[in-house]
Amino acid sequence: MNTDNTKSQMRKGMLEYCIMLLLHQQSCYANDIIQRLQEAEMIVMEGTLYPLLSRLKNDGLLGYEWRESTQGPPRKYYTLTADGQEALSQLDASWEEISRTVNFLKS
Amino acid sequence: MNTDNTKSQMRKGMLEYCIMLLLHQQSCYANDIIQRLQEAEMIVMEGTLYPLLSRLKNDGLLGYEWRESTQGPPRKYYTLTADGQEALSQLDASWEEISRTVNFLKS
DNA sequence: AAAAGTACCTTGCGATACAAGGTATTATAA
DNA sequence: TTATAATACCTTGTATCGCAAGGTACTTTT
Image (cartoon, rainbow over all chains, first blue to last red; front, side, top):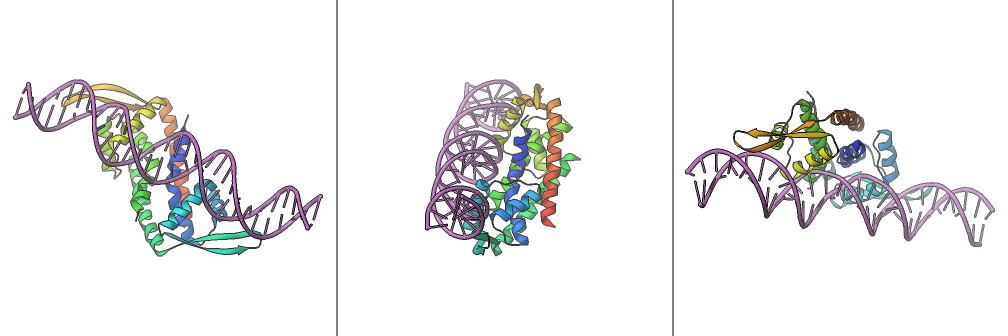
């Protein structure tokens, strides 16, 4: 059965949204994001996350700043920009639409 | 802004699930599916749908039968198989999980 | 016969998650 | 003091999949 594949596909498109939701609450660096999403039962791989963050930054939706760490190399903390917050609002709407669609089809 | 792109990504993984939800209610041929999903505010293109249906059929989740039409060539009506219903149950669970995740992150 | 409508399918492209591997900086241990 | 481990960032190659565009075949209408 390739249900795992489909399940992975379902989560795929949500990743960007979930990460922006996270960053809406507070600035994070990569490992923060991975851990927090894991707590929320959403798995993300490093090789997925770094390019995604770079992409969002290049699109102007995220900014970042370096911060020293007491336990290793400095970390890149990402934050939602104003554009990012606007985009997040639109994704909220998209999520609502998809939710409505699924619930409509389930009934 | 590439919000449209992200939105499309979000829908990506849901398509398969939505189509199986539809076929759980009744057998459909391609245009049925396109129309019904449109009513549910989910757009699907032909070039997306046909390969998707073939894939699900090859995975044993769908079966089909030809039926005559009064208004043109015969139509391929797809139906969920037993395996398909089982897979759908698992996707229901996946959807619940994703829903929980998003709502958790939104709070 | 020719044109329009309906239905199925394929090809080429772009986007993206993931696995694996790579580089650099800092902390720890020998 | 040097070697190893840990932390953190990033890149490359592969597979999947939605989408736009184009193609074939059958049926109905003109």
